[in-house]
Image (cartoon, rainbow, N blue to C red; front, side, top):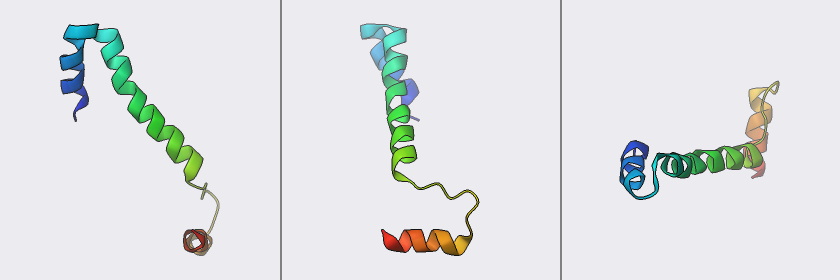
Length: 56
């Protein structure tokens, strides 16, 4: 939601390439964090995933 506004504000100062790249960093960091911290639940029963949640 804020990315178009941020790109527009930054593009005048640094150009469109760096402005778009800077807004792409945050979703990439979020993806890495999700893949690193959240356990894989594919192929598990609901009861097993509830036990994982209770352990943390």
